Amino acid sequence: MGKIKVKQVKSGIKKTQRQKRTLEALGLRKIGQVVEHEATPNILGMVSKVEHLVSTEEA
Image (cartoon, rainbow, N blue to C red):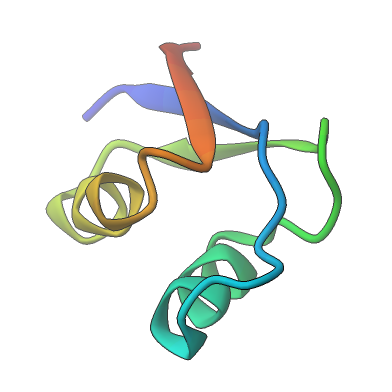
């Protein structure tokens, strides 16, 4: 599996609790923060649930 970089580009304010918890599980707290994860099915599923709040690129 490769690695992906996930960057938060929009706020979680006024989003559902599920989306807020998904951002937290990805390790994202602030806009502009970047985290790196393995591209596992679990991580890719979480990213797809909040894809309107984050941007991704391969590391």
